[in-house]
Image (cartoon, rainbow over all chains, first blue to last red; front, side, top):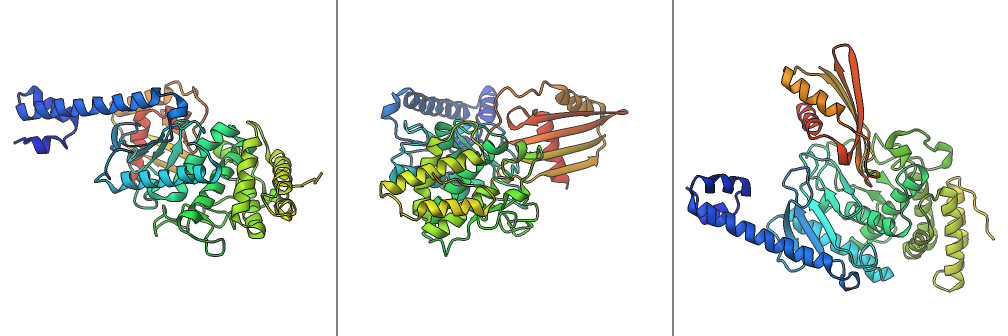
Amino acid sequence: MCTGKICFIIPPHILEALAKQGNISCKKALNDTRRILSKRNEALNNLLLRPRAERDGERFVYDSQGQYEQRVSLQRTEEDKPSGDVVVNEAFETSGFVRDYFENTFGLNSMDNMGMPVISNVHYGKAYNNAYWDGDEMTYGDGDGIEFKNFASAIDVVAHELTHGVTQFMANLEYKGQPGALNEHFSDVFATIVKQKYLEQNIEEADWLIGDTIVTSAFPGIAIRSMKEPGSANEFDRQPAHMDNYYSGSDDHYGVHINSGIPNRAFYLCCVKIGIEQCALVWYHTLKKLWRTSNFQDMVDVILDVTQKLSSEGRISDNATDAVSRSFNSVGLETQLV
Amino acid sequence: MKYKVIVDGGFTGIRRTYEGDVSLDEEERKILLSALRESHLPTKPPLNDGEQYSWFLENDDDIIEAIFDEQNHPPALRKFLEQIKADQ
């Protein structure tokens, strides 16, 4: 027996099949479902068609319902009450926290500084051990529950993915080799900064780990990456902490998640010297000045220029340039102070 | 049918290899081989944190191989990979 109440939680294709068999209650539910879906799609389309300046990074969380598809079922927007799905709510909250961090700290209006919607897809695929940024939106798997879990609930994972969006609209670093490793580096940098803010930790209390909450006890390691000690987070961790161990193979788009360990370690060393707030400012303004094919040496040159400028404007401490320079020297990258 | 799949990249950056031998009926074998022969030239730049899938399937005495990105990984191969993972 199909009651109206039950029919509302039944997928549309089943409702359709039952409606075709003459079930009135299912037919009504199907019509209501379609009407609601159409209204929501219309609302989203109207929002996307609004002039860019009027947007302010509204959040949309979709449920992929275990399919390898995005935007399957809209579950929560700024106007909605919390969903019954905890993952939807966590994706909503964490993406809002990251968006607000960039706005409150740097005045950035969403990832493109034009208020683009912050769209998340959760429950993507089956036992999918990944999260990614596709140029427009974020997508999260649930993990296999054996080694990985809860990608969408992890503040550092969400910050990492959302920062890929910020990078895309600033430096648009191409996703291979050293520019790709820098792309990954900036995502790990702001994942670390946002995570420490979210957990209200200072740099002594912080663990400097990325992805510690998405691994289970069966996973052979404590996290995915370590900013403090690249290469030590798990038994598969191939990140070098110094240019002497630079990976020059073709795996992983020529090592984008591997060689990012080198600037990651420099970031950690610099935070210890001048604090994470000053580093956040320096790294953010550096990202704004990089370009699509920037390599490690380009970044070092730019970051020194940026640091000197911020220091001369009194926005960071006088010793910041020396601290940045020493940090990059420590990982084998030469610096030339002008 | 002997298979080998290497999953590389992704947020975790962890490279995983799945290798084995499965018994498939003719229809299943045809679907997999056909998926592997689909055009797999990337039409878009790689996704940030997207995974890369390198497939090697043995057909008679040949080894057919193809590499796919997250965006163009054929559903039939995705499903087969899901099954491989579930069986491990």
